[in-house]
Structure formats: C-alpha cells, structure tokens
Image 1 (cartoon, rainbow, N blue to C red):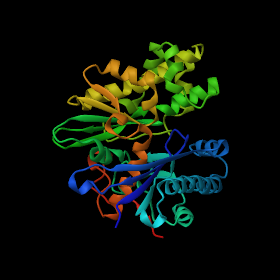
Image 2 (tube, rainbow, N blue to C red):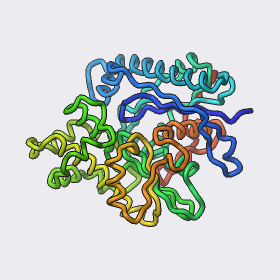
Image 3 (tube, rainbow, N blue to C red):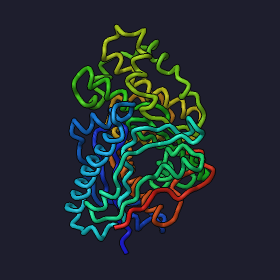
Image 4 (cartoon, helix red, strand yellow):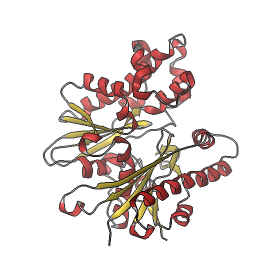
Length: 373
C-alpha cells in the first residue's frame, strides 16, 4: 500500500488553491514527508468576490454559500487533476485528499460557549469528481472539545521542521500570521499572532489595483507612521494569552477603516508600510513573550516571498536566524497544503491531529470526517 496523500489549501488570502502530492513513507523511521508534486489554481474574480463577501452578513447567505462551495470544489478538482497528470499516477494510488475548505467565519467559544468555525466545502462532490477518498471538516472536533479549532499547523510543523534539542519557531504568513514554537524538550506551542497578508492585500488592491504588494516593494517605498502603528496595536487580541486564533471576523477592512479615522490624510504607501510593520511588530512581540529560547525563525506562506517583510523580521530579531521554509526543503507556498495532507493521514491512521496546548482543547482528538470513494 502506498503512503501517498494529497493536501489542498485555500487560505484567508483568498488568492486561490495550492495542492500537493506528498509521500509520508519516511515518517515511521524518523524521516520527513517528501513533496512529489505541486499544483495551483487562482480563483476567478466572481468566486473571490463571493468568498470575501461571505465573511460578513449578507442577503441569502445559505444559497450563496452552497453555490460558492460547489465552485470552490470545482477548483479543488482541477488542482487534483493537475497533480495526477503530472505525476502519472492513477487516482487509486492516493490514499486520501485532505481538503480544508474555505474559512468564512471563525468565532470559537463565542455566543453560547461553543461558538463555531465554518469552512465552506463540498467533500462529497470532490470525491465524485476525483475518485479519491476525501478527509474534510478538520476543525469542528477540536472546537467541540473546547478548543479554538485552530491553529492546526503546529503538529505538522513539528513533524516537518522539528529537530531534537533544537528550539525553533515556524511562522506562517498567510492572510493571518500564525506561529509555532517548537521547544527543545519536544513541547510545542502555537497560536495566531494577528493579521498578515489579508490587510496588506486589501490596501494594495484598493490603491494600486494589484492583487498584492509584490516583494513588499510598495511598503518599502513608504514610511512607517508610528501613531497609526500604535493605534493598530491598540487591540485586545494582541495582548490575549494563548491559546488564541483569529481571522477576517476581526481583522478586516472595517477594522482598518476605524483605526485609520484620525489618519485619513496619510499617503497610501505609508499606510502599507505601517500594515507590514504591524505584522512584524505583533510577531516579534509574541516571540519575545513566548519563544525566547528560539534560535531560528522559519517563515512559510505567501508572506515569505515578501522581501520587505523578511528584511524587517530579521532587523527586529537580530539574535535569530530568519529563513524561509525553502531553506528546509519545502517551498513556502506548499507548506500549508502539505499540512492538510498530513492531517488526512493522521485521521485515517486514527491518530490525533490537534495539539491541546495550541488549540485549548480538553485533549488530543482524531480530527476530520471521511468521505469514502
């Protein structure tokens, strides 16, 4: 039997889908997963607009979300087809696809004590279109056990980057920044730091028409505005202790507009520079609070390609070696998708996928729902 899995990830950046084909046969002997293939597909403008709109209340949401889920899965299936074609494998060679879905609301612990997290998806349709077993709905079991349902990356970061006796921090810069602290004694702590690409991309699209600030060049052309940065950092989430997780429910354009009320005359490039510095400042503060023993910071996600962000992180963390996951053998935009392949494997093996210390759950839990062929 093969130990091949696929992982699909569409994150809060809302730019599209990344998919990987990964071989986990080396894990029992202490090896690491090998990525055999990568494919991606961008969201078309109508789907991207709808997924963003579903993050806030609106008319006829159930109908719109159902159709958006179908459209999302059609993109997922296209990425799976690309992976199979490039690898020359039959669908039967793949044990399962880990399909996270698209997070449109994340409110753990709120309202009634349980709250909810909602990833729109249509796993049954994905099985029908690919002929491969699908594992989905990874977050709800952790939430039911009293956790945040997020972040789920720390366990995988430990499997991918962990080295016995070496304290290391892994930072994923997607729409939201999340940090995994891999401690020398094998312990792991993980949580969301705050916004990353979600606000920067929004501001860039609004003022330049570009989908993102390539390489952080626009941010680098501006000046950080200290009073605006202080206003942005004046948010209770940043001082909240872990376990904690967040998303567009808090860090969204309306939040930014309110924070900018007294700074409406600032040049747009200065706002972009300040948003980049917000990501850096919140991450650095959390490392100083909870990761003081770390000797290295490994950055993944789309933000790892932002040269300006990487320079600012290294400047603010002179005692750490700051690198990207590419230096560890995994391109930055393939890490999260590989993580969901790993989570699918954990589910099928009956192994926990969460780390209670990271999510706040009452204990380790097998995550996900399985949709057989």
